[in-house]
Length: 194
Image (cartoon, rainbow, N blue to C red; front, top):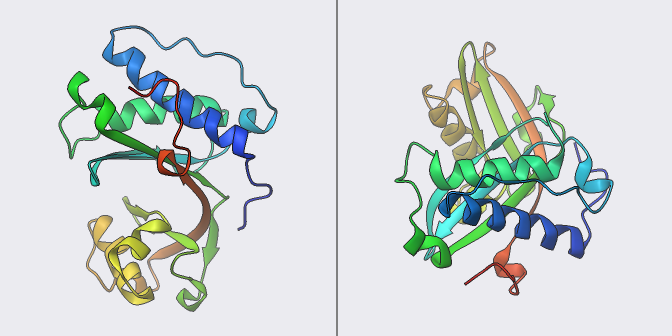
């Protein structure tokens, strides 16, 4: 469930640059023209989420739980989706571009769990599935909200549109994953910012 190898500082910076460039080009009405990834690591197929904050408030968060395309392409696509297609928020406008902070979460493969006691707040993200319902919360969410394990499990159930205690029922499937989380706040210099 752990990530096999973490990204280098340079690879993290490149993914953040790709995300910001993809958003900027969409705001300017240009099609994103993917450049080849600079390392084999960025070309690995892996799940990832892109989260946007504007002045500390969530402004979009979309991703793939499991990898379906190379990481650098996923980041570009999810950056655009978080900026313009998250149904919870208005699409990002040009005047907001310089106000957003981008955060990326690269995911380990999902691991099905039978014992919720193994979930560690701050280390694991969660997926709850039951029939057609599914909810996902990233590892940083319970830390930001100050939740304990049970509250984290309950909120993941509610995110799936299920009742808060469904995680205790046999019909509910639980999965956990770890995430490598980094963002522009930890990489303050960005050539495309501003």
